Image (cartoon, rainbow, N blue to C red; front, top):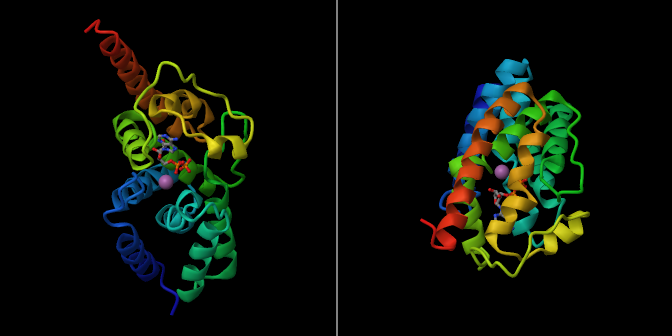
Length: 218
Ligand code: ADP
Ligand code: NI
């Protein structure tokens, strides 16, 4: 029988099993934070909590960055799981559309979310990329990919296409200018905007301190 609580519990266990111990900042705790923040935003926005929770839980199970660049892998893995759980087709389509549209794709590329449920999940995922946790995740990802922390000779780029954004191998500090500092102006919901403006300040303060220490001023 179709039981939302049961499906959420089984999906939680499934994702926890897949992502526990992942080392690039896309681990289970990222999913748990995104799920919790997405649900908090969704309650404010009166969005469908079942769709929001499923999309948050399943949004990183097969990210293109770790699936050999295959953009269909994430939505497909989510869809297969939800079919196996007996979730109605319309819900599956909504959840997979959210997952397909979630990612940041470069400074010059718009990534609109058409449903309020998608907007809640996208805001929550982006909030986890900024603030203190976002800083930690950026350097975890950079280390995972063997990137430099910072190189004054390599300026940040403004990527006009997803292709250019994906090819980027610059230092992690550049990622702040190429993505993280841009996120506060790309939030969808009022709650997301408020939370992002607080976390944005943490990024700015971190960068100020980083550059002061870099030149030995502190
Ligand atoms: P999105 O959820 O928009 O797809 P990603 O999965 O690309 O976000 O990013 C997940 C985490 O990895 C974020 O905290 C992000 O800042 C970080 N990250 C992604 N690309 C880079 C990079 N080139 N350098 C440092 N951190 C990165
Ligand atoms: Ni994510």
